[in-house]
Length: 196
Image 1 (cartoon, rainbow, N blue to C red):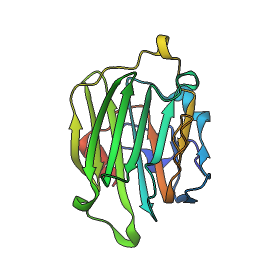
Image 2: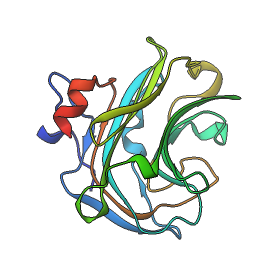
Image 3: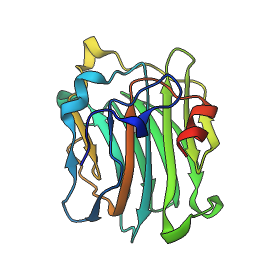
Image 4: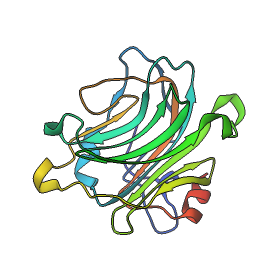
């Protein structure tokens, strides 16, 4: 289960606000997920990172590995690490109202590790206007035009989920998620390699 920060989550001087040192769980895609909203007060819309190992058993619909949003916005504003079934892409998105910014990586380009696990890291930093997706330690794609989610307009982060979208739309993960680390800072290329 996710716990408060420990040594797994350190990346140089940055400390994870929540980590797990083993597989969080197996998900069957039909309604199981972890609600980790207890860490919401430590997160912000300005910068942050999420790192995890994922395994996909079967993809029948778009899946969310990690998702956060405010309770009141019904998914209009969210930050999400996901898998898109139709286009077979891993995606990290930062969505502000009608402005969706994403970093994608086609699944067929990824080097899948033993037992079908892959390491994904999503990083967002609105100060530098960048979001990035790292696959197995490599920054594969990034976007450089990010519109910050205005907390005073949309509310503070309150829903944080593993294995499901944090908004009302559901879409549950079918597979495994492990070694999760959530940061309130944006990790650098070197820091991502360190935790990979």
